[in-house]
Image (cartoon, rainbow over all chains, first blue to last red; front, side, top):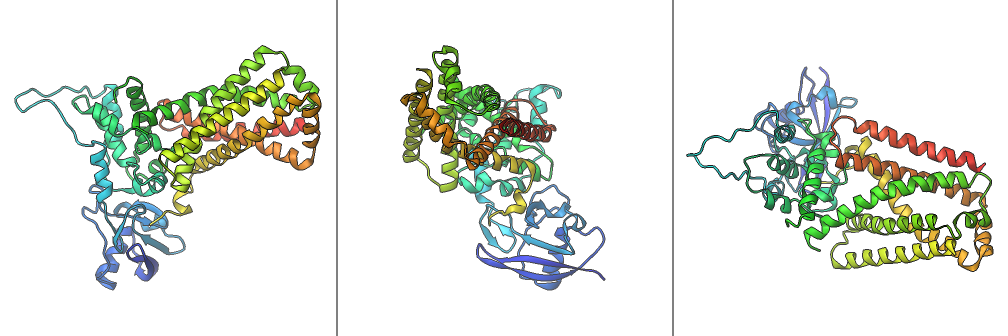
Length: 237
Length: 112
Length: 115
């Protein structure tokens, strides 16, 4: 049977790659490979996953140098000469092996005011949002984010400017800016502006290049740049 | 520097970029045209001396570049050398003033 | 952990590198350019003696490089303005190809007129 030679990161920030040989199977995902190593070869390997079907956003890792969702990444697509290199996501502290600490990543969603805040109560009628309205379409284009951290890991501005909110948090803020029901936009635009916000983005497009849901955080961030610049010119913050 | 100023810097860089887009296009065409028979001081100064239209164009060009380049360098310095805060902002402002002074001196030199 | 070239190897990232390198290089060149034109303060002869110095082949080569950098920064900048201010989705790689093409054409036009 064919085997796959797999280098897996072991340790924390300082650590090393450990080599494993994993039996090659048909339709094998990278997550299958990691699971095989942990169950059959070395039970001390730490990694994170949950749904296995591309919904939960837990299993992202760096595969052959690029951030990917491992449950939906076929070995066929990424193995080079029967070899794989699997590391934790970049730009996040490593807890152990393939597990990163996502705290800062999600704290930045909060700092970008990524929480919906409406004015209606349970006694009010539903707000009617026409599905084909311009704002709803813009929100639709960015709404399918699963919070996997691939974009954050791919983004160099995050590495160069540690305060930068990053693509995922800004993309989330953009969906709310386009949510007709939300009442927090003035504060949100102030929160996502400037050197630590959307204006730090250099349009590298690594986020859009790597997003497993094929979203374009770059386009969302461009929208925020325009909206916040307009708000700043009007003196709203 | 407060967030509003940061955003206005971003906007200033984009507005100056739009001005520069036109200026650089004219500049490139002029360069490519001017080097046809080799450069000579007589030819250059013949074009620019006493010509108010060229002088006005170059004043606008210098002003736009004095706004545009320092803002870009501010990002590059912050990201490459982790240099941020008041010291960087003052250095970048000094650079803007120096570029404007040197640039306007050059325009004056080829106009008179 | 930090990303290496494998994470960065895609067209828009290369466009960024070109834009950053050309921007910094042009900013460093500007004071020299302004100083050279300022030689005209000492009359036509002042500028002329600088221009004759610039006839050396290495200086001409540097001039070709500068024209390329300027054209690259111009077209790359127009691309960025389009990406930031226009509604776009799928045609950003076309913009990139256009930027590269116009840059090469400008460099070639300069080179052909030089010789």
